[in-house]
Amino acid sequence: MITHILNRNLLFFSKEEDDTSGRTKAMPSIKGARPGKAYLVVLKGENFGEEYEFKEKDIIIGRSSSNDIIIKDEGVSRKHCVIEPATNSYVLKDLKSTNGTFLNDKKATSPSVLKHGDKITVGKTILQFIITEEGRGGNYTL
Image (cartoon, rainbow, N blue to C red; front, side, top):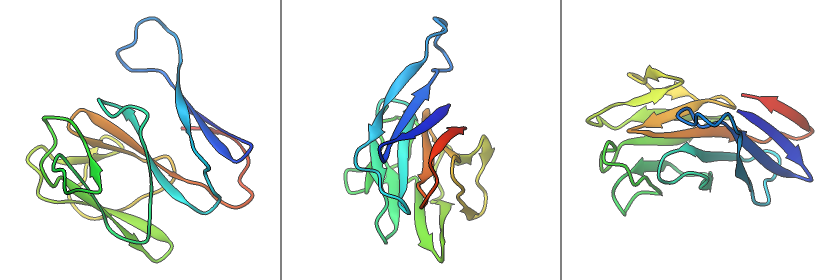
């Protein structure tokens, strides 16, 4: 995954794991990305390309229509996991989901502080945690 910041927009380029063509697939940029903000971007799954900006509240992820982020994936529980704002960070917690929540390919068995570029897997869906920082221009290789 390569990420570029251009004119205050984040641009994502991703090669699908099951893509045998060798081509790189461009994801939409985060619209109006602002420095100092946190986002989740769907890298793989039916919600591919969707982006979610964090507010100062818990973000519940799951299949239920009452969640903040609705994932259309049969392997995702109704209320699968939550991301909670903490002092200068965000914390990922599994909500006793049936299939588990994975952070960077490891099962999240306890609350975990998220870092820029972390990948969260719920069911067959992969989301990436992005933090834009003041003065952090240039390229990222994730």
